[in-house]
Length: 201
Image (cartoon, rainbow, N blue to C red):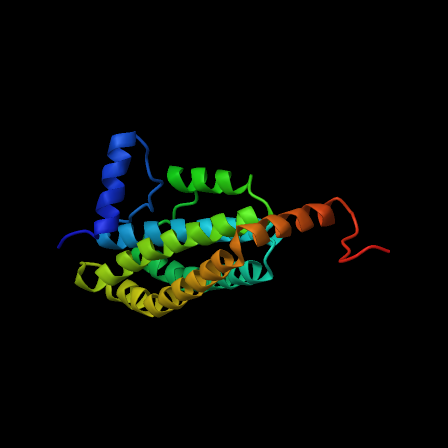
């Protein structure tokens, strides 16, 4: 069986850059496909939780904040399904984000308001597309049936999330550059404690 295209591409990238991915630690006789899936899934879960925490205080759009909250809830639910399977298989979960996700998270910490919103949406669309490729490759892999079931359940969620993210992205694009500049100025005025008035008086 071949590994997923996304996983193979990422492995090649790590080889070129000399980076190492914190892997789930397999038990005796653990299936390598199970280790790969659990590692990738837990990395995404940790990343979504961390990025969601940033969105609580740095996002301007209530829709972005609500999406981030929903995503963290979904990550918690998937994590709750993965952990007992990992324990049964004797696989210890990774507890450190891989290098590229740490870089992305560090970049997000410097974003505020609408800039954060746009970067968060773009980042999550890319992450969801990558996740969907991994999940859709699971049925043909040699992974254990419980993990294949988790992947199958997650496909519909990832698909809905991607559609929701793209709708948010289109909404921001339709706002236009001039409106976004005005919104940024309003946000800065609000943060500085300046009153915002439509007219004088």
